[in-house]
Length: 145
Image 1 (cartoon, rainbow, N blue to C red):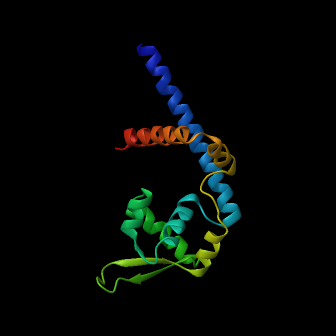
Image 2: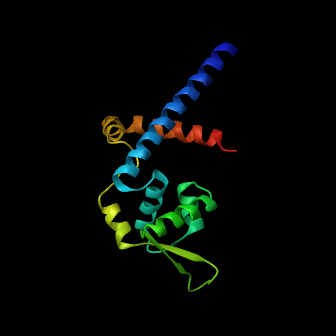
């Protein structure tokens, strides 16, 4: 039983590495075609759904640290894709807004996932899609430190 458990956990690690590698390769493809990494695109997509949003709120919504989001916002700002403004109600808080150039990229509908994956995922039964989501969420929660 112990040996079988170890083999399964090793298979999970190998599979997670395959997923991580595929996502890394796709992120490089995104960068080549749109000039954005996956996290930058995630932030732009989030900003496109809100007029103004605080960095901390972005971090919570996309599960990245506030420091990481701040660094990404800096890069997006240098590219002219986002702008910063002080919150009129709380001058200590900085709000982020997507610029017209940022909206132009979002309007091109870049995907965070590979087209092949999306096609195959869409072909699954709804219950299978939910099962996959539930499994991935469970793995993510088990890996949280």
